[in-house]
Structure formats: structure tokens, C-alpha cells
Length: 79
Image (cartoon, rainbow, N blue to C red; front, side):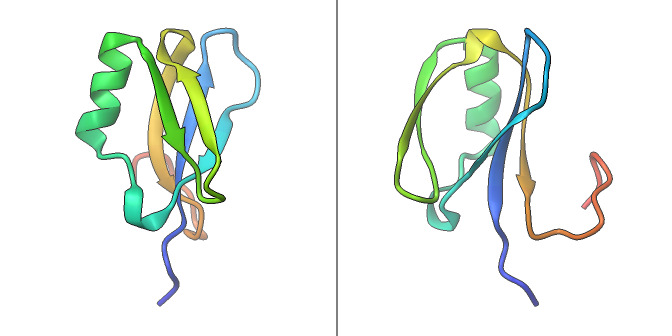
């Protein structure tokens, strides 16, 4: 079984390709927390897998979800 490779995927209001940030497996954002970020539209600091810090303004995010980059067959919404 392969290790999971969690990622935060953001689709911006302005359009274009989604932004994908790999996340550390031990510090994955909970779905409930992500819902709060989207609801409040505030600025959050996210730690990435390479231990960088990214400042995100969720007021400019149209859609956000957590994904597993290790998964081979990708169908949105299915695991």
C-alpha cells in the first residue's frame, strides 16, 4: 500500500489553473477547519510538506478541497 500524499487544492475566483500545495502527512488540515476558512474568508498561514509557510487569503478562493496526490485514478468526489 502506498503512503498518502495529502494536498490542499485551491481554485481562485479569478479562474485559471488550480493551486496545489502538498501538506505534511502529520499536519493535514481537517475538513471542518477548511470549511471554516472558506466560510470566514480570512487570511491563514498553511505549512507545506517542505516546511514552507504559505499565507492564503481565502476571500479570493472559489473552491478548496483536500486531495491525495498518490491516488492513481482521480474522479472528483470519490475515494
